[in-house]
Length: 255
Image 1 (cartoon, one colour):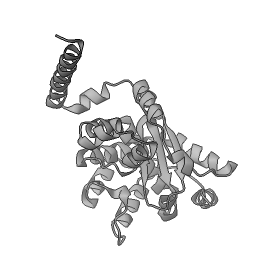
Image 2 (cartoon, rainbow, N blue to C red):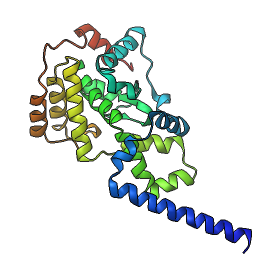
Image 3 (tube, rainbow, N blue to C red):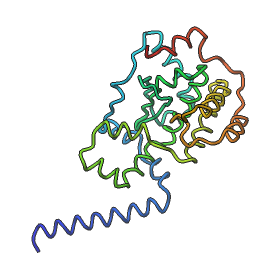
């Protein structure tokens, strides 16, 4: 047997072992497998893939940057579980009404979302939702599932670019159960932060009435279901996120 034949057999064996391992993972459910992956690994993977959204990041003035930090601090960290992951939140110069998370805890809030939002509480509701996606490892889960597809394999072995991966995270759809989990987790986070969840409800209800359904809605639960959810997380002793003057300044972050 030649060395080439041996190498070919070893490669074939590796594929068989990999296929069996994948079958075991899928058979037991991918969520426990993904959530067992150390956060440091996800951060390392995010670093290796890179990102192009930093190119579009808006640089606000000192006051606006402080307001962004203040908003994030109201929502994270709130308990010991939050120490399991890290966040990097930015505003990007994109007119689409959306906010999205990438691997490694990076969350982008689009300029278009800030312009459509009518209160800082509405933005806080969307951000709390995205933080839950990060904390529950939904981004990594979607990434792993994509790697199991032909498109994912081509992106890995076909000379994938940062642009392709950034577009994947920007357009990545979540399952209905993941969106429900993120809504519930976001509402619980708003409750802990003493932020009025009416903004959360108002924003999503208003978005569905637009002529073009924005990406931020994706597969979210219906309004009735979301209202029932919000009722389970009543806001106690709500405290404003920003003053009217601060909100006016924050909305113009990318101007």
